[in-house]
Image (tube, rainbow, N blue to C red; front, side):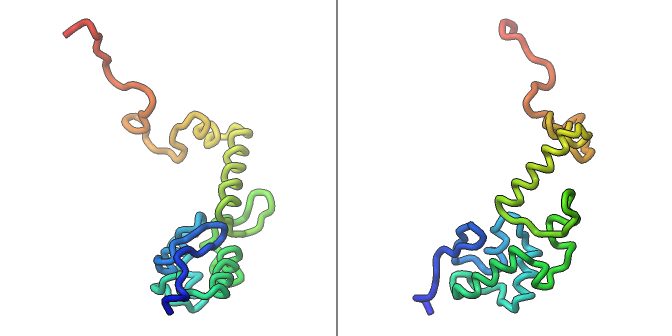
Length: 151
């Protein structure tokens, strides 16, 4: 069984350490968290504590298909990261570079329409209503600055 072990497994354009458990290895893919990796593992009847390096290539390909289209593997819609898409209205799950490009497009759309969230993103301030009196003070000096000549 040791000769079948793969030290690196490639899933969704990402190299994953073969010594990780299936649950932790799938969570290493951008766009897949612990809950989704667990749901995919349970829907495919996998032992979540097994090391991913021992899986045969056919199982790895099935897992990759499940990550790309979780709805086909009975994963509920509320676990997907792109529900009711702005442009298409579909519920899909995005991973890796597709997810990053979509988030960048969303931010650019908010900035272009000059929405409140877009303007806050532009100037680097908190977007979701946090207090700013004492936090988010990076970049500018706070308080009184001492003169060099005095002691």
